[in-house]
Structures are given as structure tokens and as C-alpha cells.
Length: 311
Image (cartoon, rainbow, N blue to C red; front, side):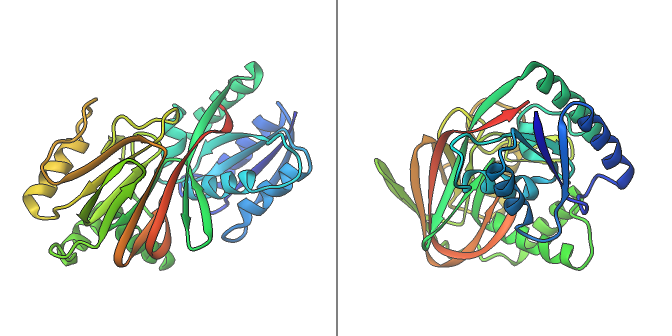
């Protein structure tokens, strides 16, 4: 089996020694080519190259952003009809996609699980989400968001650009500080779609392709507990941002449960093929924890059985 391993050398939770151990372990199991990512979008370009050159598998050692780039490179590649399978080895701060697949959060342990999957050719077909806006499109593996959560991600990316690590504590502290400055009176967004009654006055929208949405350390955060890779997209929208409403929803999504959050000012969708978020003014937008600027309208679609993952 020919495999290309894409390594993000700036990944949050790995170092050179760990990377060398993983590379040796994978290299003993497959015919391995190793490529380091050097700039934003490089993982997507390398994944397209792997597809064009007939690699059987593309492995990723990095965080959710590197995984997202790789997935988009694989799905947007032309040429061969048969797409390489994906291997994910967590190396970032949250590693939501890898953990949602059931992989250990430790890269060494995850590599061991990956080697077992390789030996047994154990594959899983997963659905993805796709966002479309202004003639552009991009796939996402676990979540998208518009409004407050994307604003927090934008703020954290600014801190990362200043040399600070994106730790769970930093996300929480940034979210708390940003909440105090958020406009809690003038909601901009409307949710609508085929067969879906329009819901106006949305401050924040979480779009999920699986659950959990994210993690705070080891604790899963589950605003859409019914979401999965085998169903369509789910959504949780907040029409109130006051302290009582936020306290209630935070308490619910931090508690492991198999029921949907409750509240009079929530917009909830489950297993939907398509819906659109439109806004009266540009609002912040993110995919898989990657801030993508401000948008006034984004359509979200479910793409069933989009990808084969060795897991």
C-alpha cells in the first residue's frame, strides 16, 4: 500500500521526537512518503497530488485545520475516480474529527489504532457537510458556525498570530471576554430551507455533521447530540444571548445526554439535507474551527458517504 503522510510541523501537541516515532511506525507498515505542510492551503495541494499519483491512502498528522484542508484536497481533486482513503492522527489542540471517529487523543496511541485498521483493512464511510457561498464551496468534517462562535474563533486566531497557543483555557477565556462585548439585542440571521419554516432573529448558529461539537479538555460539548456521520446536518440556533439563556444552554450542552437542549428561544434542526443561513449584515463564519471571514448568506448541504476513513 502506498501512503502519503502530511505532517503539520507546527501542530500544537506534537514535537520532532513524536513525529519521528510515528513516521517509523507507519513506514514499517506501508510504502510511505512524508510531506511537511509549509503554508495555508498546502495540505489541500498535497492531497490533490496524492490523488493524481494514485496513492492508496493519505494520512494526516495535525489538527482539525490540516485535516479539513486535506479532505477538501481529496474531494476537489480531478482525475482518478477512486479516491485515497484517509488516516487521521491527532496533533492539534482539540482534534474533534479524530476523537469523533473514536480514535485516542494521544498521537502514539492513535497510530497504534491506525496500524490495526491498516492490517485489517478496517474502513468506515463517513458523510461530510458542504458550505456554499458567493460561488465558492468548502467541505467540513464536524462543524460550521455563523455568529458568536465564529467571532470567538476569529479572536483566538488573532492571538495565535501573535504567538500564543490555542489551548482550551484560551478559548474559554476569549469566549467569556467576547461575550461581554457582544450585541445581545440585534440578531442578524434567518434560517430557512426546503420544507423548513423560516426562523428569524438568530444570534448564533452551530451546524453539526457529528457530535460532539468540540471539547473543553476531556469534556465533550454537545449542542446537537443526535448528529452523526451517517445522517444529514443538524443545527442549533440561539435567539437569545442574555445571561439566563446562555447559562441554561451551556449547562445543558456540557452535560452528557441523548436528548436535545430545551429552551423557548432555540432553533433546532436534525438530519437535514440542506438549509441556508442569511443575514441582514455580514456575520462571522467558520468551518471546522477555521475562520473564513464575514458572510451574508451561506447554504449548508449534507454529502452522504463522501469519504473512506481507515479507523
